[in-house]
Image (cartoon, rainbow, N blue to C red; front, side, top):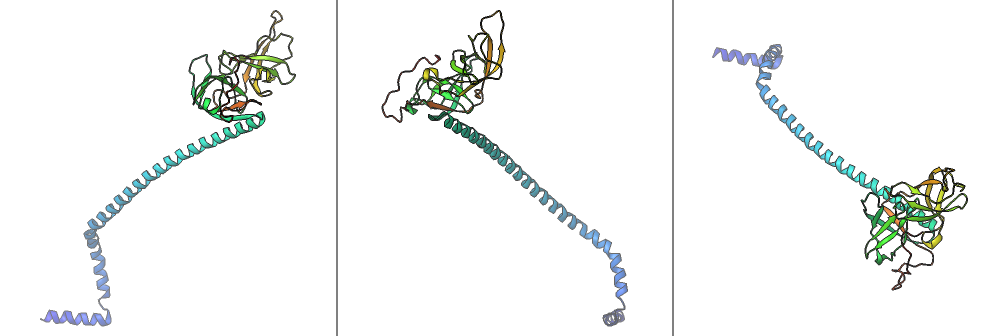
Length: 279
């Protein structure tokens, strides 16, 4: 009873005079480590839970960002491909302006894999007015002509095919010649020119227009080699095609002046053409 009375008295005095403030401070310092140890499991559990949750969130976000990165890269590649295609089509349109005749853009479907055969299949055929012997040109020069015809597709022989010959002339002086395919993807042969012929390396060969097959004055090749042996009657001359024969995905089908597309002329039948390999 006395202890309770003393305690009550001390509490009353402390409430008014704060005599026990220092004592409480000292006790709290001594008790703090015990409180820390008691709360440690709860704090550790909370910290581990937050970190695991944060790590899981980061992993999910990282995975999502990786997917977005892959998607954006794929879209970028597609855009680059579309950009390159637009550039090629612009070059073809510029070529059609140079030709000044009726043209149609065709796309490559297949390539002949025979080692010495240079032929391609395009997605245009007789329903589009395509005819046998029709010339094909690219943004940089003459490419070849149609040799097989179907309703929806057709086969073209490139100028580098061993069975193809193109009438050309030296742009510098008008010297006429024939550019014959060698079967190699990047070489033409210019046969039957005498050693006295005025032709040198670097000369540009353009289509002569003889025979009416190819449009005149269109680039065909650049002379890359001229060998003149006095003991031989003819010079050995090689040329490199100006057209990107192994890389082009689009071609221009050309209707020479005076010849109308069959699809535009109704039931008009195209006039007979010469053999596809004739100059």
